[in-house]
Length: 120
Image (cartoon, rainbow, N blue to C red; front, side, top):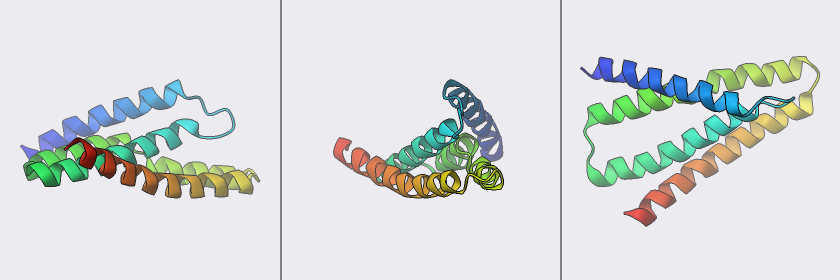
């Protein structure tokens, strides 16, 4: 049953990712992917705290984190977009995107944990 839940949740996460990246057009910089990854970091930080505090079943954790967030966040797309920016000669944008994704992603996790702690 866990595999089916991961499958369904992953599909839903992917649909949400495609919708969100469609709302934020690239226009020279992968804003949609950055937004999806940062939101995914925020959500996983909050869920980490909620799951720990409320003893959520492992199957639910796997479905939500491995399934939904796995389908939603786009680290492989991030890598390809960095590569594309760099190979197009936009080294500054590629580096800025990589650094922003890493630093803001970690900040998003911290904010998610903090928000969950404040609400529980």
